[in-house]
Image (cartoon, rainbow, N blue to C red; front, top):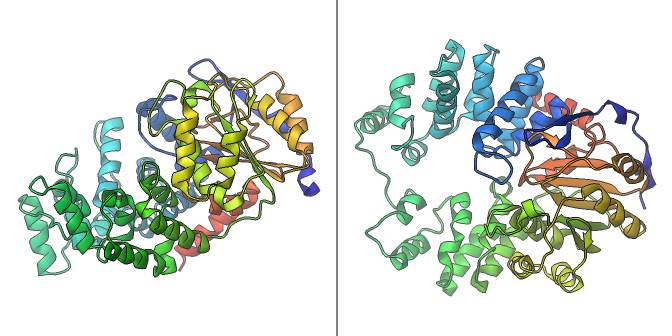
Length: 495
């Protein structure tokens, strides 16, 4: 057991409790940490927890709360972009420009690598301000970003049904074409004459109403070598039930011969999601892809690991949605369980729930598809209830104190801070167990004392984070991580 985790933090009493819009008592997180977590979890979609407008307002407020620390804010934008976030970097830069904060052109062109990223920023400003008033530097940066985009990038994101179409962006920013071919492309986009070919876009292929499903799959089979690795990964399910030996071998070659740079572009959750309702024909391909990704990823040494999964009503209950909290919890299980071979997998709502048969199956399975099958079978048997987060963590630690070094808790934290919170803080810090809380619906509030996050005993992670291992390696001490983040950003900026 790692006794170095026992050091007691001195700042517990400074954590501020607030009432959220539903009257629940929660801890208010540190403004800088809230910015980082929300940047890595931002997704504007209807959820059990908040409407898109509320999520956006929370993010906007968090960015504004950090305006006094602009270098950290820019470093978070840079980091979020590196981790594949699309929306938060675009919106955060737009908010920075609204406040007329200096933004390096290098950061602008680094963030806005696709037309829809620029369109998102303009649509946000128009929605919140009624129009957009861009600084000269920001406007020039966006123009430069458009000029840097390749022909195929522009053709794949013409956004004909969006508030801001690509033709609008070209008219607004007037990018200078690099050559005669790009000049003709700009002209064709404005005149609505440009179309993608099926060879250029999987999306175009799949949306072609003149082709049958079988014909679309045949076209994909012919182009396995040419489809981008991300598009291929996201659309693997199209091959279900129709994989011949040649296609299987071509797919295996794409994933097993991939270089490190492209491996790191793979979102492991895209692979996991591909297997959620998958037949077994492609399991070997997907397992090989996950193995290749894992080989290129630095896995933190967490010692012996246990899992505690929230099955309160807000995580699933009567809902049967593929993207609810219960499904997201099993996405994490499907990724983490084969890598760490947990000592146990327990569940909780009002109290601890144990399902020995299912637990054994989860621990023994190494294929995500099989782990998802366990989840589907469990859903109708789980005792959905309230969220006794503190009580359940304490009981889990008490019963497993000599068995584990790290406890993953996957939850939406949807409930009040419990009366036993002080007992919980004391017990959790002295148990010698690293607590990693994954809030799959993080919006700036938490039931784990935020003054204790990223101390020697507690880490909070927000959303369905594809870079969880980078997160864990860098995020053991938030203040140290913050300095490292700023340093890495400035180092990149000065290159």
